[in-house]
View 1 (cartoon, rainbow, N blue to C red):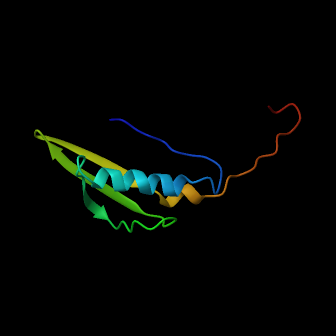
View 2: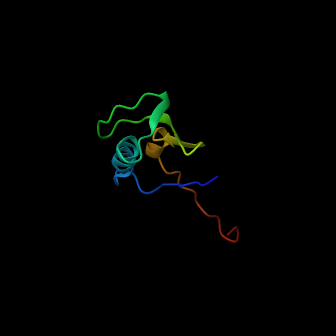
Length: 83
């Protein structure tokens, strides 16, 4: 199993990048289909989908969760001597 974790600062283009990646995976030559979820290829729209394809008898799946890309970063205060 392979993973791609994608993160960054708020409003830095994460959702639009994941949307472009999803559009690429749905197009030829990759030709994935949406097995579950709803994908509206509109920039800035959060989505959670499962993509699927079968190539030479092998099943390939992508779980794409763009719902959590907008969560606010939590700020932690470090106390002296508690590093």
